[in-house]
Image (cartoon, rainbow, N blue to C red; front, side, top):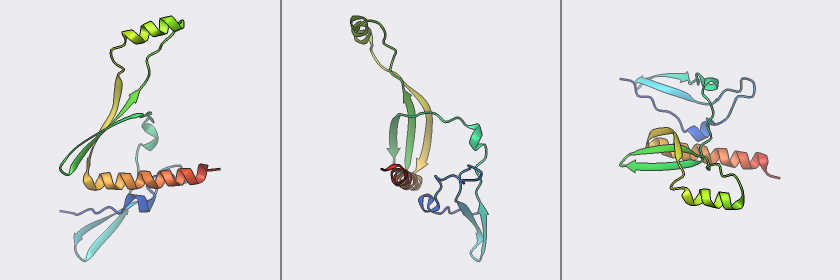
Length: 132
């Protein structure tokens, strides 16, 4: 059976787009059958543009030993219209505001660590490019 170690995602810039193709770049996988044979294969995102981008503004993380479940949700405030008195009456009738679950992901502890590093690197790059 092949072992497939993947290099550190943050160091490889997995969150970046190729300026020409506008596709994600920067990762390869090393497949090791025997200790003295290695085959490096580039990774290619498929159906990248076919998947819609959804706004996630609520997050829930659950865990047990070695495993995490990351749930992403979308909260949209209920429409409140009318006079200030009408709006106050509508608010008092609310019993909850729903969060629509848009995705749930299971991750190992190692993948959570990679995701954190990738997000931190992306945040630093975002702030560097957008400061000023």
